[in-house]
Amino acid sequence: MEQYKDHTPSMMEENEMDGYEKIDRYNAGKIKRIADKYHDILKDIGENPDREGLNKTPERVAKALQFLTHGYDLNPTEILKSAMFTEDYSQMVIVKDIEVYSMCEHHMLPFFGKAHVAYIPNGKVVGLSKIPRVVDAFSRRLQVQERLTNEIRDCIESTLKPLGVAVVIECKHMCMSMRGIQKQNSVTTTSAFTGEFVNENTRMEFMQLIAAKLS
Image: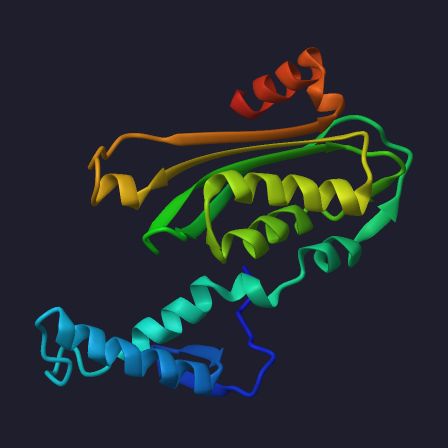
């Protein structure tokens, strides 16, 4: 994944250790506002936000939140348009096992898993790395898995105008594992199809291919 860079006025944090230089860019104003709120939250849950282990936690949480939700600053349509090419290819293109990390908008707890995306070109193909980038752009927002699935499908459909799009997402939700029903092994699967993938035979071919393992 590309280094996250905010396009608004930013501050830069650099850490050099054992020859490794880490450079993160954040919106300084946002970081301070969020950190101030988390300072109060720590007090409200009964902690001392000024003790050694916690005195930098509000800032760390603010930076983590800004990174985890940086999809709001990305335009998935423009990501696809940046690498569209004319090709005479009309067979299924699949990018599977795309890692998904998102946050449930109901509890702001993580959900994570894999996305499998396919489309059938209609004169246009897209650079393969752009499909995972589109998945990231939508998942790095407050989400529900059902909407995330549809957003990925609709973006590819409206931008590439292919003969069909298929999206399947499988995720574990911490709001089910850590709280509420507390079922650690449950997995939620969502799917969305358009065009040729509405046809049962095409859809079954896609499902078989994403389930297959390369030898």
